[in-house]
Image (cartoon, rainbow, N blue to C red; front, side, top):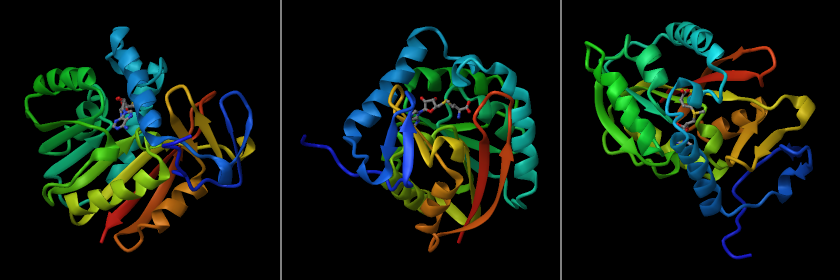
Length: 250
Ligand SMILES: C[S@@+](CC[C@H](N)C(=O)[O-])C[C@H]1O[C@@H](n2cnc3c(N)ncnc32)[C@H](O)[C@@H]1O
């Protein structure tokens, strides 16, 4: 089939959401289909009137408070020294921007593939007295291009799971060009528990739960530009484990 490419560097064995075993070295995909499916999935969420926190969290609104509390603690321990400018990637309706980033950072840019979500984020952030929102980037992470070296922190939450491995590396390179020296990038993502294999591909929204090891393999490929700092797990009963990873831009 034309357009089908090897866009993952997966571990040995993984599975899809139906429990079918997938061999990592055999998974190939058409990346246009992959991103269109993901985009359409989130448009359906918006069209159903779920451009809100519940929609962002897949109906698990109860995780919101502890998510923000743990993220704040993680961020505080990173020794970030400049709090001028942050980019929220896969910002959705601005949940993370509003509750985690706005109390800390002076300026915020938000990026998401879905315009409806960003419109809501703009409204939510405009209610804050500090008026932190600067730029709204309606695009996929896979299309992100650095225009200036400005960000002190880039926060990517439940969004890099939509990137193929190839585009993950490209995205990191763009982030490098968009970040100030010594700045920090954080990924907060579901991770595949080893029990389920090295990865789980969800064909419904075209996302991938990578294993912790797999994230490290990707980070290693960017080690000329980023130094891995630390990671921390957050667990909720009945949900996949979530890992926060922090890397410092060289
Ligand atoms: C699970 S929600 C998380 C939203 C937000 N980070 C939060 O924690 O509340 C995933 C978000 O990723 C966005 N998204 C999906 N694919 C994307 C892509 N390729 N590029 C940028 N954003 C994407 C969706 O539109 C949605 O807003």
